[in-house]
Length: 473
Ligand code: GLC
Image (cartoon, rainbow, N blue to C red; front, top):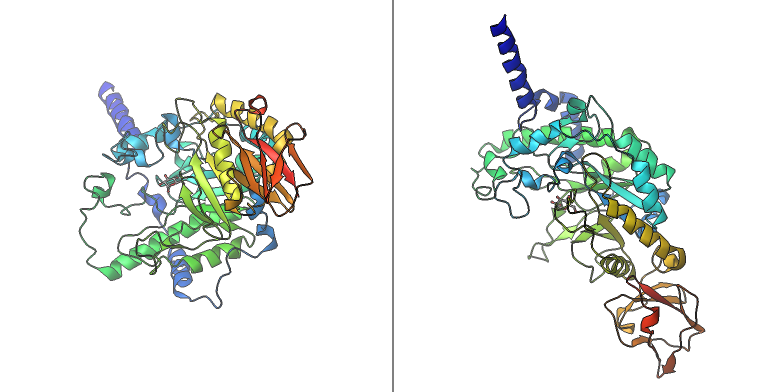
């Protein structure tokens, strides 16, 4: 009897360990022929007409004025504050801390957010002027925050709990547009990664694809899987406003058929706005490879302040917290200062783009306390100066001033960030009707000479945020 007990104990112990490994649940990657056939048909059927981008649908037109969105990377990595996915790649400079992959996937056993209350997160964000949110439904690690019929996720580890439904409901309740981040590449999908790719030192040492026909069939099957998951996301939660993709990948296949896939996505959600990261097609005119990007909006300024207008609609994403934890939960709890936040938001708006700062919720579902401190500070600022950034138009000309400008018709907003000191100079064609400090409404004394408005704002009026001077022409 004792021996039998020991045997059962050992067996269960092993079974527990097995369930959290890289190659767990192979059966949930089964894709039926019909779904593979659909994927094949989508990529092999040329579009009848060119897909218009940005999306001309009336339901997509909110995007260029959205101004400020909240990016959230959340998943099994959050329980230890690891860098999402990349921490499983051994010897990787931006990760590697929870490698090898079996160790990383074991985090799935601990991810069980009991304090999850997205209504609290998003109410604070809405009050601070945020108009949309983007949550990682599945990062490269492949762990789905919804009980997908495919792959790994809450289906196996949380009794099928759906973490997306409360998020979507909370977005709607607080008037925020709903964004889903989704990584098509999935490092848990059997065979997608060569074993060497889990180590930065050996990742390029991979035998070439020999049977390209079989490889293409494997790609169609993988695409079938990816499309099934996207279909679940886009047909189970009502209207989804943003699909934030992050890299389709399959060894030995270069054409990812972006336009055909995007047309199919629009057939499910006609008013959706999709970013440029299904794949980037290299622009032959730009051999440096930074390339041409296909999507309703582009995302070239990742963690770098925008300096030019890259496309009609675009977005700048960056890490709001100290960066310890990368895109994920930051155990230090430290946020970058307000000056950083406003500088990046003003830089985005003055060039007509949106700003998407990222915060990682903790594994238990709570936002770091400083999230609420920052949101409150920004909400107070928004009470007097919102019009200068949220929905504000771009600069009337970058060379006109030594500070950043946003606009609304004949009203121009000058952004004096904490790091700016000295005299503000603005080139205009006419004498302004008024020059006021937006926070208080007080008139600002200025001179006008030779087409230039000039003024100094006394240090008594300067703050640690963005001091906006409103010029009416
Ligand atoms: C990059 C990173 C990914 C992150 C994303 C956010 O693609 O690889 O980890 O989620 O940027 O912009």
